[in-house]
Length: 301
Length: 300
Image 1 (cartoon, each protein chain N blue to C red):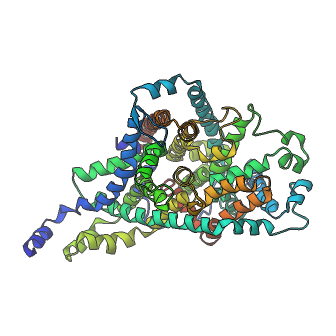
Image 2 (tube, each protein chain N blue to C red):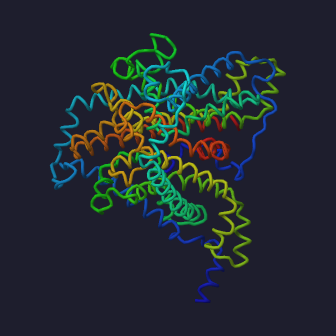
């Protein structure tokens, strides 16, 4: 079973470098002559990507009358911030805080337990650890969201329905397989001699884990953290089935409920889309490279 | 205690205790493995989500397997899987190669290409719902009647609209994967080809594509298996409609369980989803594994 599920990460990942290396390309396909076909396709795809984003942004600044009368593709003649005000007055801050709590509450424990497990799997021996590893690998191949009904049953039985903890617990579990896989791939690259010399100095495994393995795999830890954070931040299914009230609502679900509350007020609905995306956009502007490498996690290494 | 410690130090290759893996194992067992067993168990019961769970034998399975909506959901899922792959794979490959180029304008375009990655599926669905409105969206905006279709209300069109929106959301991700793959190809290969006088197309066909073999396998697997997870986007965009025309298997499972309150049948659908997902992953692994061995031999 193990070998069947290792597919998502190409074998080169084992030899991939621990540190992020900036890739510089001085020469490549299409340097000598302009690539007309590629260029044309590139600009066409840009239009496909930009038109919806442009439409969402300009519409979010229109008032309702302007939305119904003006050309949908032209910016508002009298831009207004009323839609943003309306969204912010409708518990947006609560939803944002909830998303933040669930994201951090998932990612930090998931990173901690996955890192410890990855360390044990790479450095340790024995049937127990190899079985554990195989179980996690199996988890990669199974569409885990197909288990939402028993999860719903468990959460209601534990009286956790409609709490943020209900979102955190299964999210941690679902984050573990891919986190362990990527972290252990990177941990295998740490030279064995370093562990040996620390061992000779009398260091325990616990100390080696924090003082050697963690610093050496820090880029991977950050990458995995970003990958999980994005998935949890944008997650929709667990909030939909495990929460109900506005007090526990997270951002993606709030977009859906705004749709019901604002009904025909499309500019306000789109303003909520912009506001919900803003935090990630800020991160994208500030730390694009880390965010993008986090998105593909180990997949492109 | 001290003697034990020194004894441990003597055994150099003992390695860390398996207990370090216990917390992760506990979480995974409790919230992934137990539910996995639970979904199989619940598929043999009847439960409305609130009351008692009653053992019912195979009745949920008979309901699900004889329900034409299930068959339809399987067909729609297969269609979306197929068309998504046909659209996304070549576009992501070309964009990946394109953005891997060193030119400044390409780097600038790439920054914009990856914007959809920041949006949640719910946000993408809501944006397209507004944009595709025949009265206040694309059509009147560009004064093109052909764009003013009832995109989401026409059961002949809606499937392709869904495929398009899925591509809009996921092509950037696969572009990123291909971009990473292309950047790992040694430039010396292209320099040699240049000297041999190979044109751009020959270089793409004879160098880029074979070198991207692993990347193609990875990306394709994620695309195919990932299409079993399209839930939130379609739930918000069409709700499965009009009629049953975009009711994919995951959505069918959700609606059966949480809207029709038939958790037994929904669990049976969940089991089907797991079996199909696992089967596809195994199949693709087998195809990929063969390629992997073959390319290793070539490299030797």
